[in-house]
Image (cartoon, rainbow, N blue to C red; front, side, top):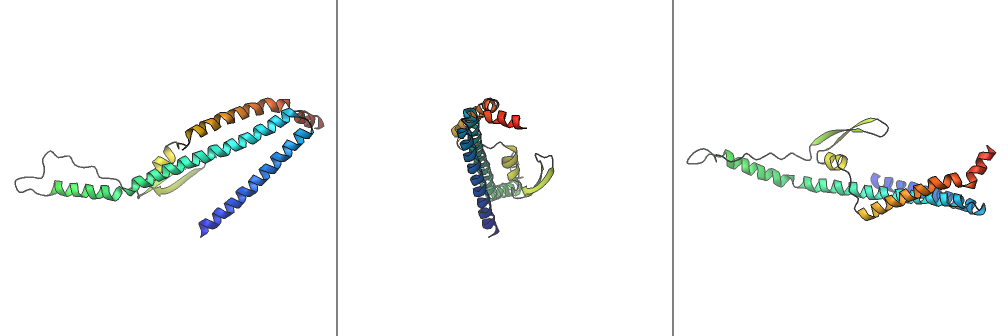
Length: 187
């Protein structure tokens, strides 16, 4: 129940932030059009495109991380069968044979590691805080050490290029906009 309440609260926060973003973008577009500041208009549109592109890139990365976690969980589900096979192999190797020692020259199987065993992971955050996590052993490799593969690489790559183009428009137009010159004169 707590998870559902948190999800709806997060949805409300996201909706409120989206509403604020749409309102502020709408107001900036209106101001630049009313002032006939077309460089400022280009700048506002470039900023809006940058925000949308960033949302798409984050969603694609999240989907890639989720896919990695699902792969790790599927691999961990095969552990009981691997363990059973290992135990059977060890019994055959250790069992005495009627005409001599147990299978000479046979390789000893490698014991499978329990993926549900708790592993401690040290994570360094962006603000240089060290966090220790206790997670199942199957998670660290695919969740932390491997780059997420976006499920839709073409959309991801296209959005990256669109984002760079919007950034270039933003850089050029911010210096040319009349609104910034007028504001700097007032200060």
